[in-house]
Figure 1 (cartoon, one colour):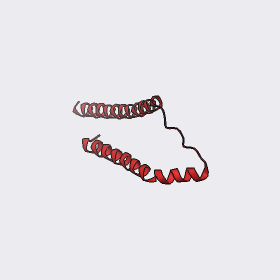
Figure 2 (cartoon, one colour; figure 1 turned 120 degrees about the horizontal axis):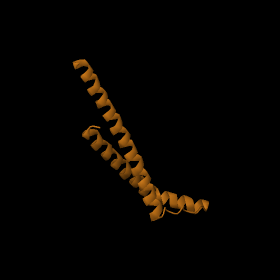
Figure 3 (tube, helix red, strand yellow; figure 1 turned 60 degrees about the vertical axis):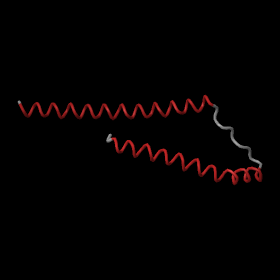
Figure 4 (cartoon, helix red, strand yellow; figure 1 turned 120 degrees about the vertical axis):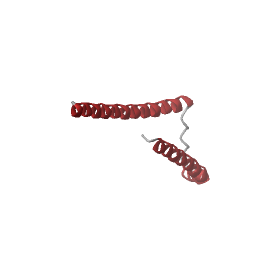
Length: 89
């Protein structure tokens, strides 16, 4: 993948995470008030271990995707090379 697209994807993901944090922070008082009025309790935040497991799962998916892209690219290059060799023969 082109480096520019990788950079753009990184910054879009970062902007999305920052926007999500901002929205959560802005809506926190509303959520607290809602929970107070309805009597619903706050769900516990994931433990450190659960957070690490989630991060590892995400990294695994990313690595698998990149590996699939690399394999597809290699196959395409081999195919192009073979067709070029056949044309020259």
